[in-house]
Length: 123
Image 1 (cartoon, rainbow, N blue to C red):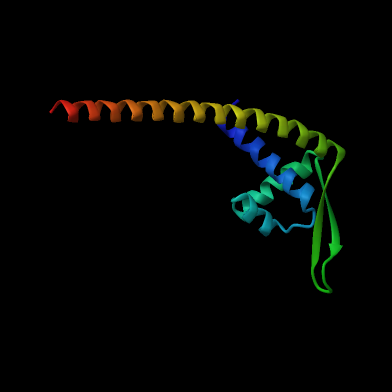
Image 2 (tube, rainbow, N blue to C red):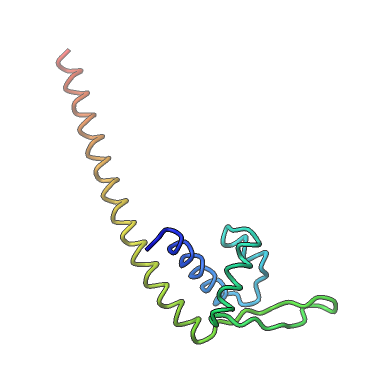
């Protein structure tokens, strides 16, 4: 999988998860929560709406403004489940690789300290 495809899937997963918990979130708040620009949030949201995974429903928030509620469709819920599994699998692999790197660094540091102690004791 390409990095771009992976990034897109991660963004879609995070948008779907965010909307499932908070369907009346504004795009501005969504962008802040995702750490992306407002345009980036809008782009991701439109892609999910166009693919039939999210349905936007207008409702009156106040007398002058309209707001939207973003509802996951059954297809969106299924996609979120699939993306959750991929995301978790990838994050577990990243965790295992990071854990192995940390263990290696700890062993190398231990060996370096032992060598330094041995050198100091010999001189």
